[in-house]
Length: 183
Image (cartoon, rainbow, N blue to C red; front, side):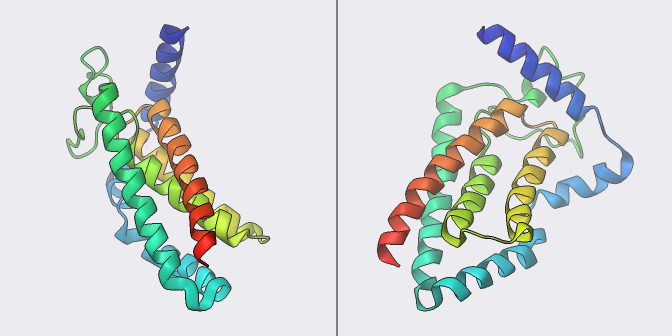
């Protein structure tokens, strides 16, 4: 069963990673960076400010703690599991499309990017409880897109980002519960 999952993960990765083009090769490395998304973050922060007003500092501190937990937790898991990234897997590395010769660190499960972005998306979702589709689409569309960039760039398998998403969800769930006690 485990071998079946690993094989399926590898095949899905090779399919998604193989869908590349010159334009995407140029923009994907930038779109995986945080600074590109500052206007979106500012909008979400404004929405949180409108809802929580004088508690925004507590919200931001909880969010910072969440990112610390997801990022460092992902590192701990990654260094415990020691699953090679596709770009470091000797069985397939010659089939992996990498951009700008970026291959990431040696291990990839779970993805820090995925844990962080899904943590942020779910945290904001749990606190805002948005009723407008645009807010929901912006939160989860952004998280899905960032996860895809990691596969496109050849540094994560789909299960790496799925594991990161699950970890981010769990951390956001508990952090949002904790944060609600203070606001």
